[in-house]
Image (cartoon, helix red, strand yellow):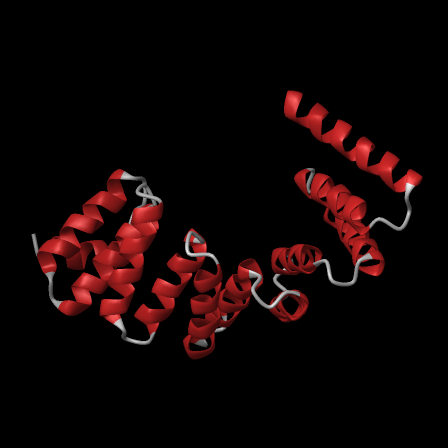
Length: 206
């Protein structure tokens, strides 16, 4: 309840700032963030378009619009807005990470990998980009790189259950069954249940 009141107050504050300065893109962007917190996607989208109208190079606004597209399952829209974000700011890691994610969702790991590698070059602590990149490496049969990248995920976020699961799959592919079992168990301890067929395959190597 307290959080909801704080968001209402934050939104009111941004609306007041816009009333005082209707050409401030940042205030529209901040308003959109408050509205997204309330899951008012339509109103947030309007505010983000106003933000871009006032500040055409506000890369964060394009990324948020891409997120709204993703919410609707519109991968083309998500890709388009994130491409605009990196055109505004070439080293914007979040934009590159989202571009990589969309390509991977489409099953195109070869396009995903360079985008994700850029995302982590520009922000080495971008956990989600490392995790998505590890998946892309796995999909292309680069199991050693998948293992190395998942290890980096765990270095940044030790309780990332999916990284342990993905390590178990990569070790399974390499025939290192002891490591596969170990990471599968760690994923389970952290709350991630592997699909039954994978669980069965790993259990066969105990």
